[in-house]
Length: 306
Image (cartoon, one colour):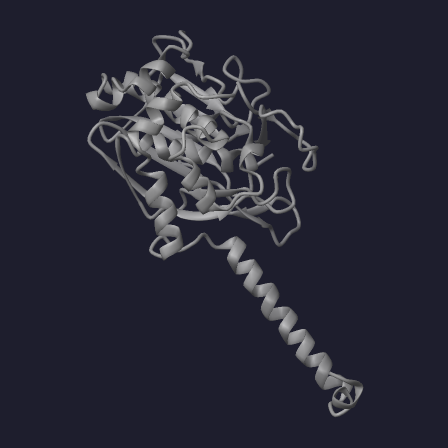
């Protein structure tokens, strides 16, 4: 399983993809210059500094508005990846499979449909990587509304990794339910400990986290991102190494998904095909055109048995 709990905030860029993040509870000249009093110049400098600082803060803290042109283009590309690209990538490259849940486990449903549950945080770089294939996979079964763009923490490993955020979004599907929980922002809390709180887990979600984000499914317990695919599979950590996204913009990542020869597509789409194959076990192979696609069947062959 890629991505187990990493306790150190700073680690080298060679960190293994199996590093997750602890859950939030665990964190022009002198003449002209002389025409103005020194204090006036100082005041101007302070004002400019504050304005720039606020601009940077708002840019990083607040996800891009879903309706904005830049955000809309990125989200459109991620939610409508060409089937040909997905089929060409197949099982992908550098993708780690999920852990199978023992047969007979209680059903995980919402509204009468099998549920996929994602729990992460906006500051987490491994969550940042994992959201890309989660969105690609789920977009084959339904429709997202209200997705935004954000980045992982600027001070963590793989700093400022471009990503999407599930905070404030909704998902509609005839065959599957999805809950995306972002427990924290990417900004340090005013107390100086941990990150600002965002979404709150329901008691049911907390119970599922305690049950499946622990041995024998993962060790040690308590890592994010956490992805529970019904009562069949669980993934803790990112399914591929986040370094493939470093130095890229949202648009560059989204554009690369249509090029199956790109490293980004091989990692993201390979992970998405694997997740799709797992979800198809919950939906009884529906929709059939998705579940029987060559890329999905190739990824299905890599799924473990309970």
